[in-house]
Each structure stands twice: as structure tokens, then as C-alpha cells.
Length: 183
Image (cartoon, rainbow, N blue to C red; front, side, top):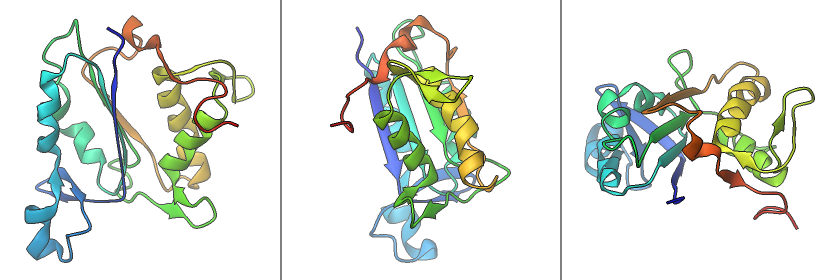
């Protein structure tokens, strides 16, 4: 199978006992509403039953907590032959806030991913340009380099994986030239 599940969460995030919680619009007060209306990271455990790799792109404050949660990453990938569980977060221990820019009209991580999609073609490390399909390992490398640059080192991404990023399974393209964002 070549199916891949990609879950993107962009918006507000918080933490309860160092566990990532995605903040929905129903959360008005952290003290009163976060546990009731927020979506805790553990909610995504249901994806374990699907025999496909799962990639999370988290552009929200405190999302690095998902990369530190062993039950969320290592144990989610219950079948090493069929699935992997990957989390790429816009934040890290060094900086818990995921910033956005009015000029870019997105959070920094979202902007970088959209840029990779629009320039699809694989990363050429010599000139930091894309060449051909953009595969998952290239996205991780690109975000790790670009996020600190465009945020003025205010955001350092974090990444966690249940298996080796270089696995043959992940050489499938995330974006292709003339893909969804290109005319």
C-alpha cells in the first residue's frame, strides 16, 4: 500500500500536564473550557487501527509536547511493517509559541509547507531550491532549516518518529511539480 494519512492542525494550542491540546473555537477560558472543548493529543490514538503511515503537521503553540509523548509517537506505530507515526511541530522546548505573520498570512510552519508545495521538486541543498517531487524526509529537512530563519530564531521546530525517517516507505512524494498550489 502507498496510502498515507496526513493530519494538519493549524491554530491555537495549549498543554495540560505537558500533553498537547488543540484549542477549538469553543474554548473561551483555559481554566473552564480547555478540558471540555479542547482536543487532547490522545484523541488521535484511533488512527492506530489504520495500516498506513500517519504524518502530523502541527502549527500551534505547545505542539512540541506531542513530540515528547512516548505513547503518542512510539506506541502509535503498532505494526512496524505497515505504519509509521511522524510528528513535525512548529515549537520546541526552547520556544513554546508558534508565531504567525500578517505579511505571510499564515503561521510560519504553514507558510513553509505551502512554499514547499508551490515550489515542489525536492530540495537541492546547494541552493536550497526544489527539484522534482518533495518527499517527506525533504519536508522535515526543509522545515528544520527554514523555520528558524524566517522566524528570526524565535521558533525551533521539533520532530519525532516511531521509525526511521529514511524508510523506503517514505520516499513517496508529498508534493509534485505543478501540484495543487501551482497553476
